[in-house]
Amino acid sequence: MENAVPHWAILRATGEAEVFSDTIYRELEGSEAEALAAMLDIVDTFGQAASEKKRLRQRRQVFRVSERKYLVRVHNWYKDEEALFTLAELIADNQNEDLPDTASGSTEDQGAGQA
Image 1 (tube, rainbow, N blue to C red):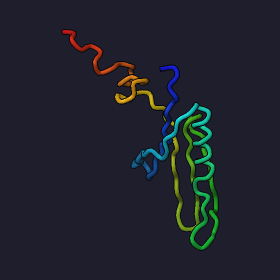
Image 2: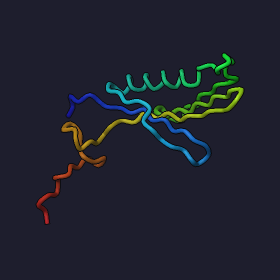
Image 3: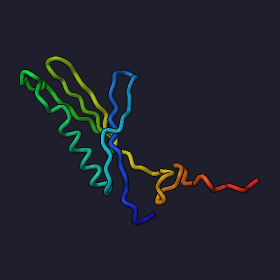
Image 4: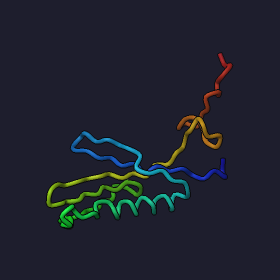
């Protein structure tokens, strides 16, 4: 289990007010530092595209919520956009022999045969 390469997901939450939806924006393998660098690259480039008429955004703000979570707010001439990016580590997978089946570290067949 020690030789397994960590698997990461960069989550993107979008929406308004209390109606947010999380989706996996990108998956990658590597060290935590590599995964964090990849997420920061996504955060740094989010909302950089110009509009169809080549007007640049009015303002772009990045808020660090924690070391693994960033909120990006982009103010454009025509609308505002926000996205919350979170770095998550895969810690359980019942199809991966290097990982436990559950977040608590147990496996499906633990406890089998006990009354």
